[in-house]
Length: 552
Picture (cartoon, helix red, strand yellow):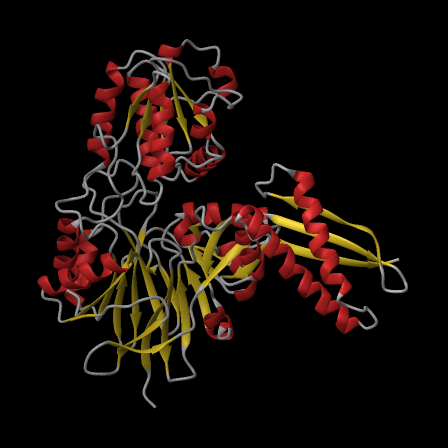
């Protein structure tokens, strides 16, 4: 049996978010595995009570004794967010650069897990040896500190896993993209490149943080009253821009929101954000006149608990906003968040507050590669095979045709669970399927997509709830009227509704004699049916129904 080199995405292919990728090398059934990234995605309103979704790691949990480690490319939640939830099932080494490692420690601290001995810190542009894999970190540019591509060397050849990246000639914080090394890697030969597809529909280049800074300074210089900037906390270059523009326009700056403080602290600890003005506490900022202050806050996507939402609804304890102030949304409107965000924009505008966003002025650049950036990467690396990841199906299919344009011999289209054999064989191809899926974090518990708890809650949210408690005498007769309670049903004539339902319940009970347990179960089923039917006739709703039989 010959050694094989395999690639398998368990998350992040066919969706943007929850990235989890596996690489394997060795003889069939003896392969050693590494995992690259372990991310989350955020739930929307269709899943009541669910915040986080992550890939189902079952396939690799079964092979955990052959899992050499989790290698992290950078600290965005869609690449590290599931680590504290899933690591206890894997119990392997974790590799990350200093800034990412710091944020991971925090996650484990919240879960009361001591990760010190399993977390290995890798220097920027450093290497890790996980036989048969030799992994080299390559500094790239992205919208967070320390984004890395990975050169993964195996006995069968070299893979370049780009992670998230763009070509930013002036990233402001951290080094420029290490294109000299990328060219060398291309010259040495690359068997396959696993590449970001997020912005494949966007033409030109994705732009530089320096250009955003110049534009922000111009905008802020003309504003007279209070300025509130909202952005992703993880974009430290944008954070530094806010500090820089505040100082240049003679204002103080205050950070608002837990993740803003967390990222600021972590960046300072890792030696970034030097020589800046000191931020002031939002409680003290209240005493500064409104033309002398800038607030930098979380909630740029209209998150209900984000600082921006609380400020706009006047429920934030420390930050007050009034007519003629300005809010700058220095971030992308993420598809799916438009409704929430436009509601927030409308609320602000209605109250006489100026709103500036990427729709009206130049206040944001993306962290992902546009087509020109992709051309640069393809030119440096010249891979034999490209596998697009980090995109919905429409992005990845477009990326395949882009790879054809770039004359890549073997582009391979994948979705979560596809196992690609990169070696041996005449050409790389999908040859098998691994079980893949999603897990939902429901409270503190991981549940499957079709879990009863989620089905029940969806049913409750759409149809309401009804409960009938029926007391039965030792002789099997009904004792007094049933006790009926309900929630979430559009009922105005309560008495009529309850009397009618009691009659229906009595009719059914008369047809049963309650000698045996089996009869009880049959009665419960019959009562559920009659209650729901009666409700449907009266209200148009079929509520989630619970029947209690109590023997007295």
